[in-house]
Image (cartoon, rainbow, N blue to C red):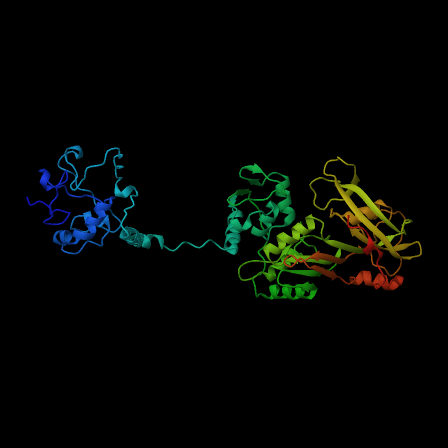
Length: 494
């Protein structure tokens, strides 16, 4: 068997221990060397020997490439090192020199696959090349096309169909993180009445991660929402259908203010904001006509009673909806209402502060009563009022500024001070009181003005709504001037 050529260069004599003169056979070098002498040997005499062994000049190759067998190995794989015929301790390394006294022995070298770093300048570049080849061999697997996540519209349609057949478990997507649980279901099932969603939450039929949920709970990404079987309303009209075009034209006629983030509608008397039992036409349903190509539709950020007219804010994006909802929760929005009350308050400007609670717990449209602090379901309600004008002692034009936003707050507070609003079917309780001739028996309450920071620029958006037809008729009959100064503007904000 022919011995491999001497790696230190042919024809060179060695006198040190382990060299040819010592009588020991030269040992094949199996890896990169970390001494200055080895580096000099590779630079001076390695080209000739490697050319003889491999048929090409290997002087500029990486250490592990010089030691590999002539047959090439796959890119990124390090060749196995040849095993010595005898134990390492019995075979001194070729070219080894006497170590001076007191010099510690050299640190044993780690295998190349454990991250050894050769001293030669060519090694980093060569190692980078090998790693690049390894990455190239794995590239096809990493470039597999990732499946696109389903769109909001697809999620909504799929869950709506599955929900009609039985119990369904919904998974919260990252885009829905932070939404209230009732708003989450309303977004997934726009044809489901909001009162029905509230009923599900109240009865404990809605569960998040196996636990009963409250309406104010907010969902987290990946949470599972269990929804019981439901009977859904008819699907909203398809875009571009005659009904959708009619709804869109109607909504356009109500717009008082609009930009790319929000709009303010002049909600008419008698139009509900959200669906309920027996309510098929409402603002939330009409907004389906404004759904864009991505399935996004404008969102409600607050509510008005069905018979209350005036300014209603709509968010056109989810970011705007979240920002505006936070503005309402922090009471940063200024709201002014106009109303026609029975009688004239003795105190022309005042403050009404009470606790309000529902007479029937669980009924979304139940009558509110004045409660005591600590009563079940009682919440603090604060309203400032001012008398703008009056018709004798029979009627008073009131301007109201609610600080809180409780259900039926203004109507309940007006009745509490003994001056219920004209046309109020729930709270008007004055016996033997007759409606003056020419006035319509409709609720005389208008969300007259709203000032709110813009969700994107934070600049104030100030919008005023005109009197609805029945209130404009009453104002004309009573001789009230709608342009008269409103003293409630100077009322406190809290």
